[in-house]
Image (cartoon, rainbow, N blue to C red; front, side, top):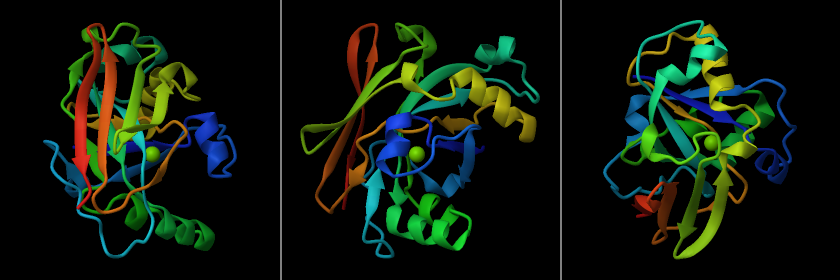
Length: 207
Ligand code: MG
């Protein structure tokens, strides 16, 4: 399976890191060894002094497709989850400065935290999913997918031009503003608002 990620997909987040607003989706990938499931702890790696959390809505691809047209894009996603795109911000800055690829800053072990999936039917309005992250009990990120620069449809159309999407692939759709560092001992809790209220889908302790 592929872990496809989108960078800078919320204006306020692009601004907080002093990045330009993209005119096309910015795509990168993580290896499957990055996955961190079942609320397992995240072990802070020694190679970075500045690991940031980024809470994101994650799409699960339900069937194979390539060159997917906009009118059919919704048929390729049947479940959504929360994910944390852990980022070694210090390594990323170095990679950016040198014009190097990002993988070591984005794809290290445990960098793709993933919650259980929720069927799309459980979401009140798929065009405006509300989600938020608490760090040590304080809300630090609060997103609404109506604020996405590139919608879920845009992303599926764009990505499937380059990569065949296979059943089971996942897409991290970008983070809203409020990203910040984690320290050993921090506890991150992620919530997704469903038809039955806020669902506590994700919990991750930094060790
Ligand atoms: Mg991200």
